[in-house]
Image 1 (cartoon, rainbow, N blue to C red):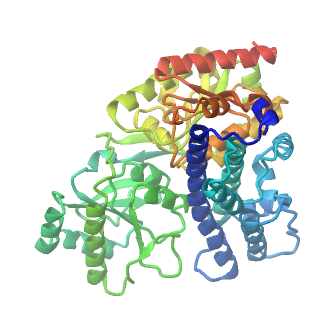
Image 2: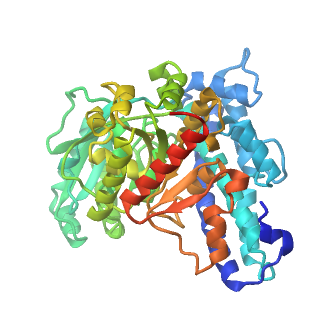
Length: 564
C-alpha cells in the first residue's frame, strides 16, 4: 500500500515512527506465528488420521468431500482417507510455501474482489511462515527506516492470519471432527470454586472417576493442595449430552456437555482436563493453552495436540494419583491466571457457523434480505481479549444493549462471547433486549448474540459475512458490517484485528493502541487504508459513544446503498 508521503520519500528516518512500526510488526508476527503453530498441529493430526498413524478417524467425511472441490482434489472413487491426506498436504503447503503462488485456502473465505485487491496492493501473503520470517527480518534490520514498508508488512500478516485460521481452525477441524452443532447447552458454573484445585474428566470411566475422588480425599494430597494455596480438590464431569447418566460417582460435580467445554475452560478455573476423545474439538486446546489449563490423556496414540500422556488405565489407582498430582502442580503454576466465575449456571446457544446458520435458515439469502429491508440494521463481529473485571463487563453490556436496541445483530467469539453468555445474551430470552425489527427477524427461538466459538474461530464469522454479502449483491466493505474489539491488543488478537481490516471491515475499540506518540503511524492505522482497503479504525473510551459511532456509520452505509 502507498500513501501520499510514500510517493515522495520511501525512507523516513524518523525514529519515533520506526519504533512504533517495529512494535506493531513484531506483535503481529508473534501472534501469527503462535497461531500458525497451533493450526499446523491440527492439520498434521488430520494427516496422521488419514494415514492411519493414530486411532482418530475422519468424522467429517461429507464436509471433507465438499472442501476438496475448492482445492481441485478429485473425489471420484477415492477413499475418504486418501482425500484427507491430499487435502492436508495442500493446507500444509499453503501455510508453508516459500514462493508466491495460488493460495487455494484463502479463496475459501475471501471473495475474489478481496484477493484481487490484495494482489494490487501487494498484500497477498506467500504463506504465514514466510510472512513471519520477513517481518522479523525487517524489525532486526537497523538500516531499514521505512515505516511505511513495515506497516505494509503488518497488514500482510493480517491476510496471513486469515490463511492460518481458515486452514486449521476451520477446514482441518471440520474434516477431522465434523462441523459444529448448533445447540442449547447448560454449563454448571455455580459449582466451580476459585480457591480449589479443579479437575475435569471428559466422559470418564466410572472406576477412574471413583479412584480420582478417593485420591482427592487422601491426606497426602489434601496437604499438597493446601501447601499450594488451595482449600481443597474438586472433580467435575463433562458428558456428551445432557441426558441423565447412570454412571454417576459421588463427589463428582456435573460441569458441562461437549458443546459447553469452551465456556467452562474460559472461566480459567480448570487446572486439569482429562480428554481422550475426538469429540473435544482441537480448537479447545487453544483455549486451554491460553488459560494454562493442562490437558492430560491416557491414550498415547489418539489425543489432542498438546495433551500430556499421563499413563494408561491399567493401574487405575496409580493413574488417579498421577492426575491429582498434575492438577496440584497446575494450580501452583496458574496463580497468574484470573478465575472468572459468574456464580451461577449458564444456559446459552452455541455452535454457530456458516454451515449451522445455513441449515437453520435454509439459505443465507434470508439474512441478506433481512439486512436489505432493515430488520437487521447491520452486523457486528465481536472478539478479542476483553478484561473480566466488573467495570469492563458492565461496559461491554452497555455497548451490546445499545447495539441490540438499534437492531444490530452480534456475532461473537472468544472471551467477549463468554462474557455475554454468562450475562444471558446468548439465550433466546435476550430477544427482548432488541429493537422491534430485530425481534421480528429472530422470531422466538434465536438469540441476539450468536456464539461462534472460541478465540481461534474468526474464519467462521468472516465466511458468514462473505456469503451474506454475496446474496446481498455488494462487496463486504460497502455493507453495514463492522468488527468490534473493545480492548486493543498488541499480543493475542492483533492478527485477527488485522484480518478484518484487510477484509474491508472498520474496527471499533474502547482503548487505543500504544504508538509511542507517532502521529504518522496513528494516522495510517486509523485512516490510511480507507481508500485502498475500504477500512478504518475508530476509538471511543465510552461504550455509549462507541455504539453511537457504529450506529451512525451503519446508517451512512445504508444511505449509500439506498437502503432504508
